[in-house]
Length: 395
Image 1 (cartoon, one colour):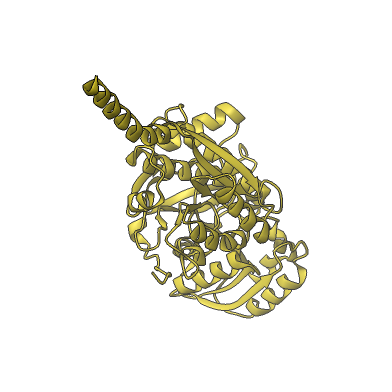
Image 2 (cartoon, rainbow, N blue to C red):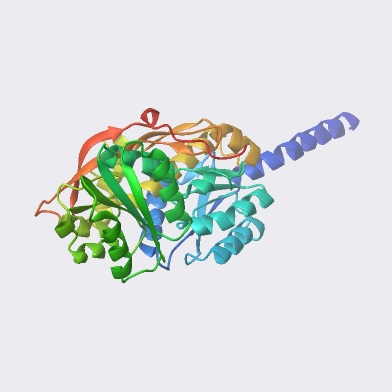
């Protein structure tokens, strides 16, 4: 009788010790996606959400599970407002008890959110906010980024326009995105001469005054003259209405979403560098994204769709390595230096600042009647190892 009681007690003890592990295994993996569902960058945010969900499905083979745990995504709309984004992230970590978060769309929102991730000791995977300071001087160890940063944009675009005898004026939004972008571009340009920086309010629709200032800076100069645009949302190409050709002034800019690239049709031969265009990368993940997007929406995937997909690939790769364990320290040690497949090919989280090292694409615009937008023809892929992306944090 006593022996049977001992055996029962031992069995109960084993069952009790296993219970937390079993419970953890069965518990949902909760991910908050905080993005601009509405607001000035709504188009970018919605693409990211589409890509995130497609990527999670692809990476899990359609099960939406890792390590026996179901992945649940909670969406929150920051409206492009920093204070709102900060509060939503705190609520996601504190009230919703999410394991980690993805987002946001706008750089000022991301900068407001970084200290919240540190306070709650939970990972924030930044996608697609671009400002260098996110993985630079405002960074903390809970921040990872699959999106490209301003330096990656700038280094890649300098490949296209940084040549002897070229004079450049930059035009950017007066925001963290715009100012970090110009700073990184200035640091990347070695041969061309930067003669002026023009900063305009992010919601500018009348570019006349700014365009006139830029024309005045460039029109009397010898050689090739370029206005290099760093802009998110809106239509900065309205500056072309000022008849820039009369002064021999060209426009250059990086890649963008397809609706914005309709304006690129005005500028055949324009060179720049893109983060993504669906026809450029040749790999199985991009093939799957393009096929799935055409099947679901009858259109190709766009700039930020690829970004959302990449963030999902990073998360599932990490979670598979931990067998579904969402312990923050375990995830950090797993993700530091981790490589993962994306629609752009292989990305790797740099250990020093958790920035994803990734390819960019040098393009030239051609006009094709079959497409509503200016088509970026690939000149060449700029591989991660070719870009000396500065480490800007203070780890």
